[in-house]
Image (cartoon, rainbow, N blue to C red):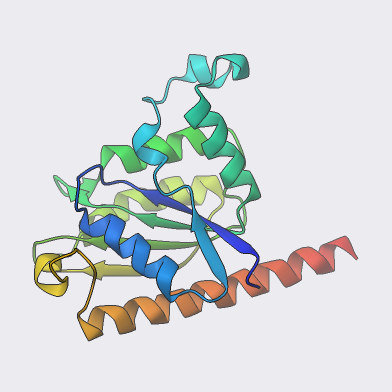
Length: 189
């Protein structure tokens, strides 16, 4: 299982992002997978169907992102909440995957952190129809409220309740990755 990869999509472009730190926590708690590509969502150009339909015109970040999505065993999406919805960078990254089939059947963990009381939960609901369209298999959702009070001076999560909740979600993702791999093996046989 240690050889599994999970595509990380971080919708926050902010330095010292609570959501990027949450993605780092997911990666650090996993013994069964590693998170890859977490910096790519911020480098993707705005989605343009004309560019998507002309693969030769794809910017390098799009090529790399779609290749990682197609090769990944699962996905972790860390998105902040802006104006009661997901960050534009999050939705833009998912838009670049619509024509790829890159999330079909992939176990997916959705996480959000916010300095506010809601913890970014309002960012999740608008993403559900897109994730369903992409064929992602949602295994868990985690929200972290008052994120600034739950991190240390270096931006790492130190609150035991947050670490325990993320550890539980990582366990769910690892279990789903194992199940998905066994189903793929059975379908090959």
